[in-house]
Amino acid sequence: MRQFYAPITVNEVISPSWKMLGFIWPSDLPVPKPGQFFTFRPSLLAPGDSGLLRKPLAFAAFEGGRAYALYQVRGRGTAALASLVPGASIDLLGPLGTSFSLPDPGESAVLIGGGIGIGPVLYLHRRIREAGNTVNLSLFLGFRSASQIPQISEAGMAESLASAVLATDDGSAGFPGRVVDAVKTELSSNGKLVRKYYACGPAPMLSAAAFLAKEEANSAEVSVEQWMACGVGACYGCVVPSSSGGFLRACADGPVFNSRDLDWETLA
Amino acid sequence: MIPSMTVRIGSLTLPNPVGVASGCFGYGQEYAELVDLDSLGALYTKAVTLNQRAGNPPPRLVETPQGLINSIGLANPGLDAFVSEKLPWLATLRCPVIVNVAGSTQGEYEAVVEGIEDALAKRPTADRRGVDGYEINVSCPNVSCGGMSFGTDSSTVERLTASLKRLTNLPLMVKLSPNVTDIAEIAKAAEAGGADAISCINTVVGMSINTETCSPYLSRGTGGLSGPAIRPVGVACVWKVSRAVSIPVIGLGGICSGRDAIEYLLAGASAVQVGTALFADPRTPELVLAGIAEWMKSKSVASVGEIRTMLRA
Image (cartoon, rainbow over all chains, first blue to last red; front, side, top):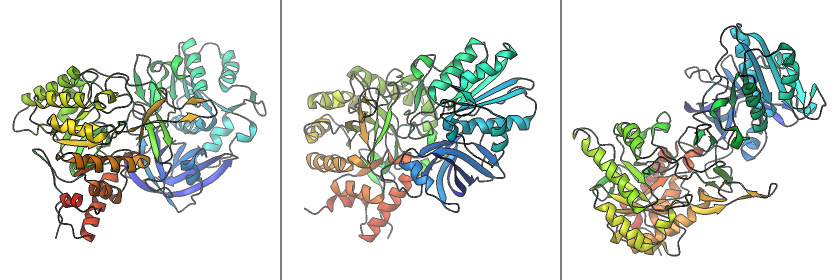
């Protein structure tokens, strides 16, 4: 990990409430892996301004020395980020956290993304496609409604989006209902295959994915979200409940966990 | 003329006045790739308790105007894991390491200091020992037993300080809570018990409520407020305490810049700690130190210790 100023190459609207950020990644730093994240502090905010903490964002793609992330404007930090134009720089710290493991050769993989959590899933999808040795790779993406579905042309995300099974909560596009229900409906004809699940999205979605995997005696890797202060494992602020009692840090023990390691009763 | 930046705390000399505050820097290793640890004035570790503590259920954090409320609950691996896993690494650092000690009974505080003293005695004398002092945490607002309840009663503070002082020759600092009627009275009790310095302040009890869900943001309801929001409270506490005791005072609470640190030093602090600002920018200690040096140069101040004599009425 390193703290550095990253020149922004793109910061564009991809759906009514979402933007995509692209920036130059230092060539001497390890390439970020799907599931990993960075924290940023927009140059508009100096230490001491309201909006004190750095904000975490997950990598959504990496191509040609540029890293990408999808984000939703939710508070002062993301609002300040949204106002930056290409050429500006952000104070960035990364890469942070654990990453998704790629499926074993010949294994089936089911990727599930919900809301703004689709970023890491799109990145993982691209990496698995590139590895080329996964049979039955499927991608499911859930949105609140059709208007939320992003339009992205960069870094292989369009290809992944085009191949995805879409679900919307309000039924305005694709499968009407929850994305994990779309998974169950689409894959039920395949019988109880051995497959690996990967999920990133809101806690109820992760919980449903973890439950589905458990029911089928399959494994699942999930990426969790939690309020975060340091992002490097020092402050113990961003914990999630562990299945073996106690807590795990989303930033340093995660954000990607084997779903077995988390206590879903208290988490979701 | 290069100004003198060293600070004397009991038998210990800090290379510069800017340390990193307990709870905000883990045990140092977490920040090793980002911060030049050897250049810190002091590293105050996350609290060590006798037994491992899982801490409080999440959510543990909420941001508030110019501040952060936390309710971590002294999550830490416990004395044995600290000695076996953290201490050998801390001994490789060149900066002074101050271990923050917490407990829910006097016996627990004593057991932690004794346990660390035993471990230090077993280390080869030629090695750096890994611990240069203790900061006694009698001010954590986020535990149901012990913590702040120790630091709100002056006779308890004096008794605890005196009992720990007998267990070690290393400097003992007592970290005080602002959540008291008269912080100067508690500071005097710590001094009477033999404390070598007073750290103030720990966090201010705070609460934030989500008006959509009508429930508190934090699992325990209240937490400890830190960050720039509490800086004026910290400066006032340092001002009061430094006029009540003759031992050094270490100021903390919302320091983000050299100017912020100078306020504390003018109020009477001999040294400072940077806490919450580390989360915004891990380079803050370095920037604060540079800011202090620059200010000293502009005011022709020869040593950092002089600053506390400069406050005009």
